[in-house]
Image 1: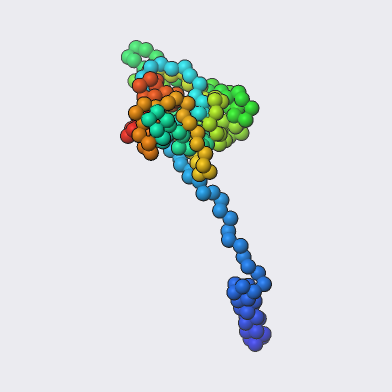
Image 2: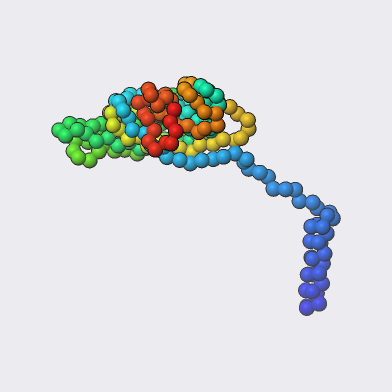
Length: 214
């Protein structure tokens, strides 16, 4: 039994050696799943005016931009997936504050769940809600830049809006222009923009904590 076991081991080693050394089988290199960049982030905005607005997938991708020329900006990422939206709004003393969020997309390929998420506060605690799009809806999937509605907001002035996103760039030479031009853009600089896609001077949703807003 010992001799047989030894012979089997030697034969197995010889077979492996022939395969690894260029004999009968040459294994191919493993597949590369993605050369792209995937970035998960939470971006915070504070409203400077009451707003009732539909946020598009183009708005979401226009949050992070790269400068090309004096007035030209392009999206750093080409696809976006919504993980959640979270809202806080503090009422004035003696008043009430209400926040409303709906994944209201109605376009085939980008439809939402049509659920209304809302909270109202009349005390010292803020109105607060956090909602994710239903995972069975297309609003919960990766979406390219488009004018299709991602979600709708109805919020008072001073509302804190946190948007959690997964952003993706396949590094395929794509170049998606921002919907609104910039002013005094420095080529190669990364910029942040308001949730509504507007420049920092006109947005109702200025971003918090960005080093360069435009």
